[in-house]
Amino acid sequence: MIKVLLVAPYNGLAETAKNMDIPADIQLDTTVANLEEGVIEAKRAKEVGYDIIISRGGTASLIQESVSIPVVHIDITGYDMLRVFTLISGVKTGVALVGFRNISEGAVTICEILEFDVKMVTIESSSEVRAKLEQLKEDGTAVVIGDVITVEVAQRLGLRGVLITSGREAIMNAIDEAKRIHHFFRRVNYRHHIYKQAFEQIPLPLVLVDEKGKVIEQNESFAKIDKANELVRAESLSRLIKRVIDYQQTQWEEIEFESRIYQLQGFPISNREKIVGIQLNASVNNRDGERVISVVNDPAHQPLIGDSEWIEQLEEKVDRAAATNEITRLVGERGTGKYTVAQQIHFKRFDHTAPIVEIQGSLFTRETLPYLKKIFNSLTSGTVIVKNTDLVTYDIKKELLYLLTDLSNQIKVITLQEDLRETDAITYYDDEIIFLPPLRERKKDILAFVDYFLTEMHMEKGSETVGVNEEAARYLLQYDWKGNLPELRSVVKQLSCLTRGYYIDVSDVKKVMNKDNLANESVESLTINGTLKEMEKQIIQQVLMEENQNQTKAAKRLGINRSTLWRKLRDE
Ligand SMILES: Nc1ncnc2c1ncn2[C@@H]1O[C@H](COP(=O)(O)OP(=O)(O)OP(=O)(O)O)[C@@H](O)[C@H]1O
Image (cartoon, rainbow, N blue to C red):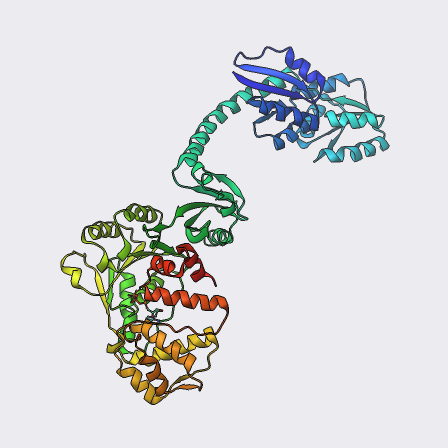
């Protein structure tokens, strides 16, 4: 049974309907209400479970704008026109018909056939009625044919208003239309219901937002997150939304909320309506809270520094690695620039809109595999960098490798490791290997990096040191830099704080390099310089370095929790 409510703008319409034979599958109820009153009735009807509203003219249009159930308009038919013209056939002059185009155009034909002299006035909106009728009155019109509003206004102006009423045929047409629409809606609604259920039940927290971050839909799993709505208002989320809309492709963002770190994946849903979908993943940490997988969105493109022959040949190697779909392996001691070169390969192949997925091999366990699969499933392009592959245990490495070799050609895989001891135990397929020599084997780079790190200090600390004198340079070149670039950076930083003149002197170099703890550890010295926040950051970095970048241990030593440590490090 289809429940239909006829909202009749005039009583006669309801009466005609009541006296009709209505098809058995339709329950037709009637109510008399015009314009805004009609809207109130229609809203009520929706609440109590009516399927469809039937109404006429301006009332039908208003209702359609305010309720979500289908509204069928009763059209004016040729019979209706004929009826009204026959009714006023005695009036020979001074008759006008005021109506929207669909009414006036049909009426012209009928008037021509019946040879009636009727003035046709077409209106675009009901607000024009009053002015048009005042003009007609001035021009000598006595009878105005039209819709409910036209008749009401005509009577107020002292004109004779004749309503174009709707006959049985028009009501029956509307009922047939209501049946067709209802069947169509039932089919569409069924599919809509299934999709909505799927969206609701999907076991991933999902939210759809507009460009301003206003939530359009959120599924159950998202709603379960404590204070999910506050999370949606976070500033980094607006950045993510903007990027998705600008680039029209999947983008990632990390967000810290309620002392948890989330990875958000934003994807375009509708470009025209600017709707963005956001999937929320808790970040992948191990039991100690250390990051195992991170997605770096919008990675920084660092320049490659160096004057050695090796750096000169590197470009060609980077080009080759970027062009091949095989896994590329970068092998070199700690701090030789493996990650930096991996980034160069990324940027040769992609631009900054493609993410880098970083996997910390030393922390990778079997439990992390499903998370990785999830991330890979939603990754359409970008680079996967696996750090410390030599520290992944043998059986997990096989599974990890299986996942990596199975990735689409749009994704480049690069693994980083310190030495090749493990190659015998594990089969890599046709992969390319790039060896990164330690700093002591490409001495020409040492002075290039000294200058580079000094420039960094100019920017960071406003230092004025511009170089090293010859003797100091010789001293730096003969050192074996077991800690490679991080060690060199640490020494240069300390030197630039210590040096008073423009050039670094060998005596300062000796002072810094002969400190007991320097040798192979990279140690930053705390400079009482800069804001409290900057010094705090220096302390955290120092402790982190001493704890081998283990964030949990560093946080424990500093007496703060891990996410606070993470936040403090990220704070600009
Ligand atoms: N060619 C280069 N040009 C500019 N900066 C470089 C270059 N090589 C390395 N660096 C800098 O040196 C530091 C160490 O480099 P990177 O992290 O790439 O080395 P790594 O071999 O991946 O280190 P680890 O094995 O310890 O993870 C970084 O701060 C990086 O910015």
